[in-house]
Length: 405
Image 1 (tube, rainbow, N blue to C red):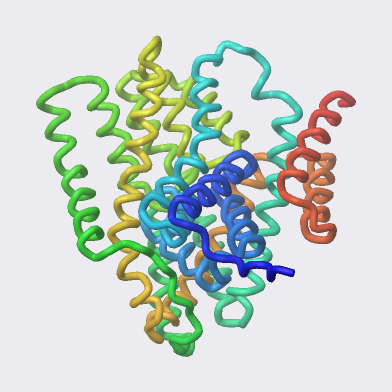
Image 2: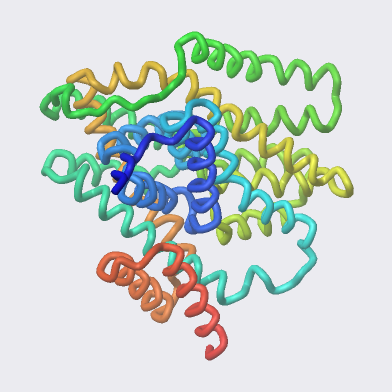
């Protein structure tokens, strides 16, 4: 009898398709916004596929929280790069982004349909997202805020984030967590960290950093000289993606300034699109596709969506390529590990604050709302239900409550 062959690592093309498939599944099922996405990513890549260890995932979360751009998308792209190189990073971005970008672009053309945003099933999805976020925060707190010092750092970060909500506050808290970790936490040995195969050479990283700064400085000059709509659109969204720290909901005021004040998008349409973005899976930054489509109405709407979408994500991809080659060396230094432990504790605090505002405050209004969210949390944490199943049940429960109320 012929022996069964041993499993082998996938080819480069196979690895790229593997990344694309897993990211596309996440793009279809990752409801709940940027905080919940980290829970979905951890479940898919750390728990189920075991592509990286828990500490490596936490380090990538800390890095991407510190960089400008959408943190959950950057974590997903980083894992794609580690699995299949730069093409893997692009595949991870495409798979995770495409479903919600397509929905948001379609919504831009179907904005006249009434009653969609007030439907009960959408509210049920947001209640399920409360449970997903709570599970993610609990799991990360149990690991990264386990002792008194780190628990105190987490609490301070959460309180400060709620009292002083801004992107600059988040960056300051993460930096403060790193400094406090370096001073207060014991150094950890380098052997505690695995080496991630990040597959980006240093020359490529320097080119990516150079291109990032060249576009940031050069696009405003090109916009002033040529004054064409597609270039103005690209420059506005590229600058927003370059400067928004904290990601997710922090992008709202920046985009409002870029598209409403010039008259590209009305205030009512802006808020309608932002509300819809809360109810679709995938990264919140696909709100840019909706805005690009609305800003260029007519046959050019699809092109406007593509331009805005590419522009707002491009800075984060270039920054990742610029930083990742140096990441393995830095993260294995004992002193840097102490700083990372402090950063991780601060990130848990930021996630806990986001669990309250905006996740809880935008979804839980009544006792039935609380009951649906609690039931979803029990399904996730005690019955090992898959997140997409909980989201589906939440949508059904929300629709049912709307019918009987």
